Every structure is written in C-alpha cells, then in structure tokens.
Length: 344
Image (cartoon, rainbow, N blue to C red; front, side):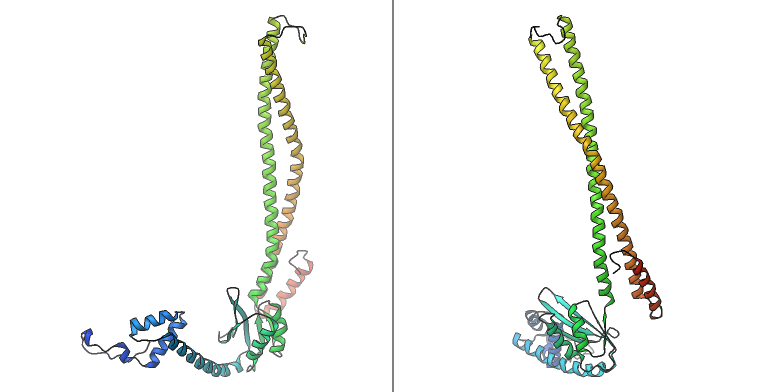
C-alpha cells in the first residue's frame, strides 16, 4: 500500500513521528478500502482497520461510495481492455458458477490467456436470461471460432444465435463427466450384484452352520434317548414287566422313566423336523447363489468393458490433433461392435 512516508537517516522517538493519517493521501485510503473489500472483509472490519492501523475515521456510507466509484472506474477500464483484446480472441469458454442454491454467476473467458470477459450474477439459467447476457458478450469479437460450454441444454439453443458462425463445443471435462455418470450406473449395478452374492453366500453358510449345529444336538438327544430306553428296559427286566404290558403297576419310578422318555422322544422329533426343514432350504439357497453369481459376473464384465470404453474415450480427447481422426475411427469401430450399454 503506497504512502508518503519519509525515511529518516537516524531513529526518532515515536512520540514525534508524523501520524499515518497525515502522510496518507485520499487515494491511498481508497486503495486500501478496495483492497480490503476484494479480500472479502466486512464493512465493520474495514472501519476497524482504518481506525486502528491508519488512524483514519471512515463510515460505512463512505466505504460504499468508494466501492461504487471504484466499480464504475473498473467497468470503464474493463471496457477499454475488452475492446483491445476481443478482436484477436479465437476461443471463449462459458460456464455458470453456483454459490449455494440461489446465487449464480455467469462467466466467459479466453481459455488460452485466462482473460475474463464476463462475470455477472444471473437470476436463473433460462434461455431468455442466457440469451440476454451472451448476446451482449458476443459484441466485439472478430476472430472468434469456438465457444466451449458444459452440457446445459439451453446453451445448445442460445450459442448459435448469440455467436454467429461460431462452433459450439462441449467442454472435454464435462463431456467426460457425462460418460462417467453413465458408467457410474453400470458400476453401481455391478456393486449391487456383488453385494447380493455376499448376502446369498452368508445365507447359505448360515443355513449350513445351523444345520450342522442341529445335527449335533440331535445326535446328543438320540444318545440320551437310547440311555433312557436302556434304563426303562433294565427296570422292566428287574420287575418282570413285559414290553407293552398294560396291567403292570405304574410305580413312581416307572412314571419318571416314562415321562423322561416321552420328553426325549418329543425333542428328537422336533429336532429332526427342524433338520428336515433346513435340509430343504439348502438346494434353493444354492440355486439362488448360483443365479446371483452369474448375474454378478455379467454385470462385473459390463463394468470392466465400460471402463475400457471410457478409457478409450478419454484417450481420444487427449490425443494430438493429427491423431484424432484415426483414433475416432478406431473408437467408432469398437463402439459399433460393442453390446455394452455405455457404447451408445
């Protein structure tokens, strides 16, 4: 920040140094205000800086007047610079910039020199709004050959009318993003199929594990049942009770043996029924797993093929102008033969 500060040959006590406000010119203050605002400082921060550092009292209204005057001057200077630069520009890149959902700016620049021709707030991206802004921007170009934009549909309608005899080209970055979005759908389908395979494997493994556990439990219950039957047979032999005898006395011991046997028989039948149900689930689970594995392999191959196609497309975008025609012909041939959903 330039200032009329006098450098002395020997140190002077701070008490007798001139005040900053006494050696600064009004233009220096204006430059400081503009610089602070460009750095996104608030009005209160600018007032505070001027008071603390520059010892200058300035109000918010005065700051607003400085900025408005600076804006008018900048607009005049930009107009002069644009008139000098525009006649020689051959390419212009146009894009909309969003800050939040409601704030949108429309920009236009020369991608070679990065010279900015347009940066203005717009209410929306309708054809009418874009037509008004770009028609004003188009005035003054003499050698313009190419206008580059993103894939916004309205540009395809507005650019040919706003820029006469100018080729409208989709930005390579946005073009590749379009391909990546389409490829993303294919990749997501493959990941979803892979997840389905994982779930099917877990379900089958869970059923097999449960079946293994139930079979071990059944084996244990059958062993207990055999012991209970031997205990009953031994009791009957000791008391001379024939098998299935109806008139034999039901002593407490015999009732306990019978109750134990009945409980074990019920448990064995229940466990056997559970095992039968689990065994019935195995073949359908295997069939489901085989089906989802086949689907996954198909979708995985589609994803890999889409990746190769996208890589070829990106390589074509990056190819040298001399190699473009040959590369495009080769890619067209591959796409014509490809059954991948990305090819169209």
